[in-house]
Image (tube, rainbow, N blue to C red; front, side, top):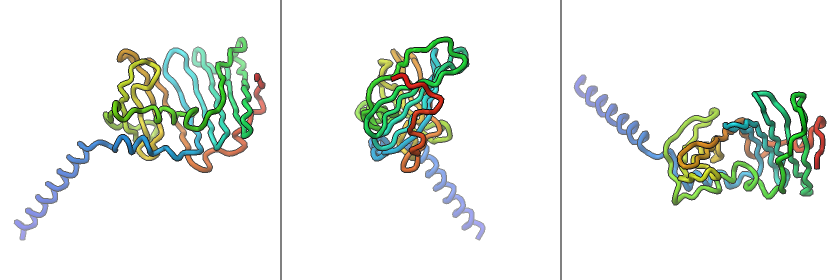
Length: 215
């Protein structure tokens, strides 16, 4: 009886070992499937922070044909100004500024253009820019509490992401990295991501009361 139990335990141990080994060696997910996961998103909110010489925080709200983007600029770790762009349901664009007491003068807005669509103007554009024929999955990592698949795009021009971290559950970016000649130029990390109906309320898609309308 004891010999039989020993054989059963040995068999289970082997099966568990095989399962563990094959799981560890299998790619996290298919690249085409990963790219297609976010295709139906029509409403979202997220925050972003960059790395580099000029630090900024960004916030993006998108819902149907409405879009709002705010960017807060820092100097010496102090908030200087918050600049914003709002596109309402009629397609009207409003550029505004929330001045911070630390600001010494009014900066150039640096914000222009028209809302083209949720995929074109949000971080989803980086997903659409992945070429499955050139890109490859190189690992997984947790970013801001989200298990993410690391995708190397093999772009090295500093204009397109060289790597993307993509949430395994939703297919949206959690981090992107730009490199030029194999040297990292900057990165963007996304947090507080919300997607799907109810992610954005109508009261959020307005110019803040404390803002000064510039254009």
